[in-house]
Length: 611
Image (tube, rainbow, N blue to C red; front, side):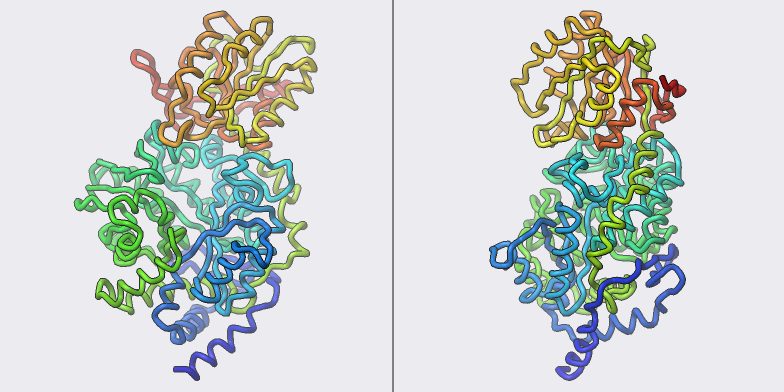
């Protein structure tokens, strides 16, 4: 065994040359991946490399291949505790991959190259790239729209593409994500979100979904998968079997979806079936319970009936099953970290991401074998899938990225233009009862723009107000911090007293407080007061589109879906009549009692009228 291990490891030391081309993943049941668009690695070669490496691994190193910690993409000095921890993960624990969090493109790429250089077996890197590579390679969740700082392209969220209904744009979004992501050294996108968002109170999915129509979600999700995987990156459909019909944030508690199996078949499962048929490479599990699938009440991540019985056996999925983050309360509250890991492996999970403690998680996987909870051969199945994916992506021969090529791929102007086109086509005018849109006022008009957003969202309103000011030089801008319970709404009302028009823009996403999708009473009262005083008011949602539920009498309501620079500019141009408005709601918006629901497909068209 020692000689065999030495021979296999000798083969691996050659995996140090920069990646010279982007692999292409072929859609289909086998999820074939080629080293370029013209050549495909034979399945036998991928399997042979994977088996040769697997044969060298002792039990604990097998376990480590399926445990993936998270790592920030920021610069870390070599003698820092943070870098020492990463070194330990690779050299001592011998983990098989990482989930990448926020950082600049050059920092991410250089850091991932350095991590690859420490590992004998190539590492796999995954990341939440739901809105393009810029979702992580320029701020992600923490600086949501800071895209003027330079970096990868941030695209509008999935629901914006849903508003266009355009599969070609979904494909393009996947293509751009793959090109930029692979240039950074990332191999797996934890995208697309295939959840059908049919619950307006959902505090965690919302605009991350393509919409509430399962067929539309299936079509757009499959197009995104094809665009991503035909350009060398693995797609991950999530969150199986469906996180859309919940009012609970699985980061904080266990959601329970109490619908029948027939309803699941006709709604939640349709996009996942389409994704499997499109050859999606990975599926991410749902940290929520569905009694119709498993009456024990365990979350899907820990359910053999869900991941093995339904996903593997019924849907015939052949790719990799990735857990949602293992530090979320949806799996921790009932079972704790160690037991959750063991149950996840029993259920059929192949990769455990973001555990609370890496050493503890690896030990738990090993203990599961030693306790007879599952066999070593069961663990081998997962490790073989991981290793085969590494070979399929070309990592068995080239695992580093070329830092010199980075700036000629990431943030390319053509990519930015495509993202801006998605943003422009997604703008949706839901209501305009007094014909306020476009904003036909003289250039000397007094316009007030009130931005409502998180303090950390440094770019909220910047691009939008810049476009508006180009038309109305005297524009007055105000900012309200969404998380501030004592925000001075009275000052905003006084500012509106002498205004010819007031634009209130909300940049708050799917939740205001992590628990609820509802806006606070102070905000809705502010809107009501403006209306009662007869102000010319336009509300623009750059976040939660269901906001109209709470302010149904607002005369004009425009949805821009996300707060990226492209979406801000597109919304401003649409308001001023400089761009056509063509988007249609991919969701319905139920209003208060006695008022008619705004149906899916609603969208008031406006032609461009450049001045």
